[in-house]
Image (cartoon, rainbow, N blue to C red; front, side):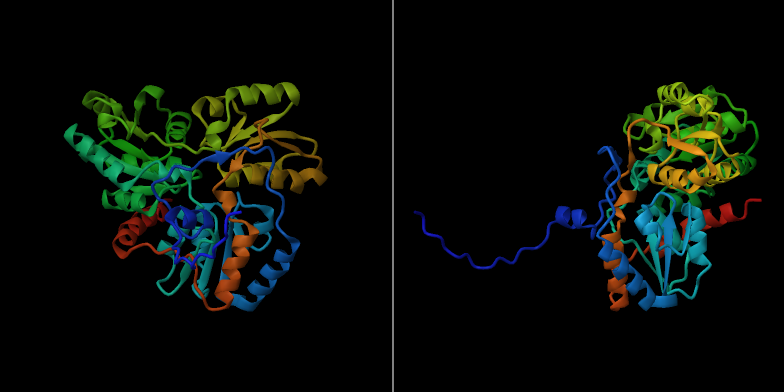
Length: 399
């Protein structure tokens, strides 16, 4: 028998991967998407509910918890306000007395909250690995290279960048530096109208970042442009895969990015649900593909989806193409009104990074703050904040 020896303790430092898995480091270069395990995760240990309640009560007015619509119910129950990313960032800015802003969402949302809140306030993300696959699809280096391509093609002075709220602080800062604005899925049309007003009508162009589908759907469905007016810039190809002539002829230069959740929905999904549920209304988010949006009955932002279902008559049937947590919450909320609400896709699929904000992470965050330890603080550097804020303020000034 081999003798067993006792090794000396090792001074082991956690690797970046280990920290990432623990949610205490972030990898801004990664592209994260969705997972489809077959069902939503089960609720956390009930004891954690009491621990979260106690910690939040101890913090009192010092903490303000924001909950994005796509969060799990077990997290949403502790949110002081719920909403989409921009509404929550504005809500944070409206609470200057809160020392801690705990953002239950993803990284770019917490960055926006830090930009719009006071320097003395601390924005905290319970899990630093809660990223966004769409935001990860456009890096500062790639976008700078794109601008060089536009310059070499002789069109940069005709281009106004418009960036979706679902983008990193670096991309928002790029937008601000080049005289552009930010948009949400609710005001994308107005933002594009403003951008085209900044240039000669016959020559103006928009570089739309990073979601190609929202840009295309808004331009074609709401502004009367054609699909031929839109070109797709692929950052992984030389010159974005486009010729100088294509760039000169285009009105909309769309970045090759998308939402991994909304990109799953297909025309086949719509055909299938209409066969299964006669009389169903199909309601989808404008981050879906153009052909899906064209086949749907109603299209709108997260807030639009919620309001549409609130106003829907009793007995109506709805198939909703957006994140599963929200769809299930709405189905439960309106069940008593005899509204049938189902997920558009047969496959159960949720945003895996949004779901990283779970009750264990929230409890750890609140208990740490209650003990005086600030964890997972999100801070945007002053230079980036300056230009990102300029772009956000242009959006706020839109009528």
